[in-house]
Image (tube, rainbow, N blue to C red; front, side, top):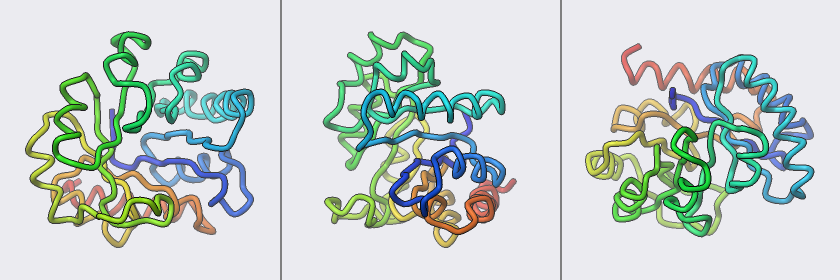
Length: 209
């Protein structure tokens, strides 16, 4: 798995474009992993979005991660699921999904990170690196300085989310992150391809590639 540039979709932020339009453009710019997040959609709508986006990504060998929904992860045969602290417990999700599906977990503290790893998470979404308008309820940011301690405490990959962009991706990855997860810095840009390419360049520069 390449966690370098992890796109999280958000139709409300996408300037009237469909998820598929944003994903296509962002993938052309270098996105390596896509999480489909549909907080307001019905199950049928979410499933149909997953079919459209999943078909495009599968043809390009880019993993599709489903936000929250174990049932849709199975129905769409997606690569995996991303779970929040209030979603299905990781160990239960593993029993339902089996050993081959990817399970990501949102964590906000060092203790949550350790627990998620012990329960079988494959990667962690560390949030928020910086406070973000997409998660206004999170007011305590981790900051660049908080990354090394948490990264040193776990063995699995960690991506950072929370106002990540081309302006801070380099510092975040240099501090230890395996990649950055981006919402508005791609979805809300007039040119998602160029936005993704700019962020990817900073990630790869930090990795020395």
